[in-house]
Length: 160
Image (cartoon, rainbow, N blue to C red):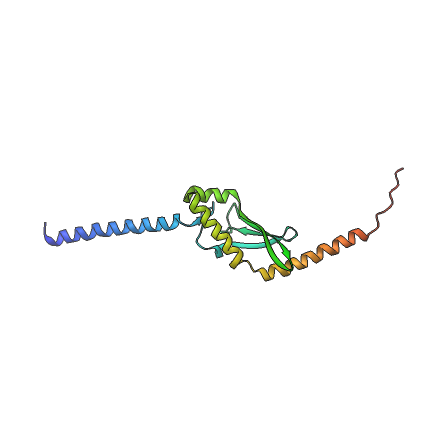
């Protein structure tokens, strides 16, 4: 075999090794990230969708970024207003999402990543000014409804 052929064989082997290392690196990158049960990787907390639908419960839903996800709701942030400022009562991810990531990443790694995701969602990704304004409107609606129901006379009922 000529020297030229040996060099070509060595280059081919080196290319195979570097491609394998690239695959391993991409797999380890993937395995170090949070993933929804639907398969959607969530690299950054900003990828979650947060919606404030359950205003009467003062609860913000945390949704999977995949619109076709069958799990859809991954967790929630519950809060109250004190002196017109939000106070977090509870922030959590639901157990199917936590269990899935614990099985993939191990308990310590998954717990740490999910904790960081919740913290960053609360600190950076929730528009608290908008949430406070919406909550004030909801509190006013509740106050008006309560006043209306307490001031309306109850009809006299006759049992015959």
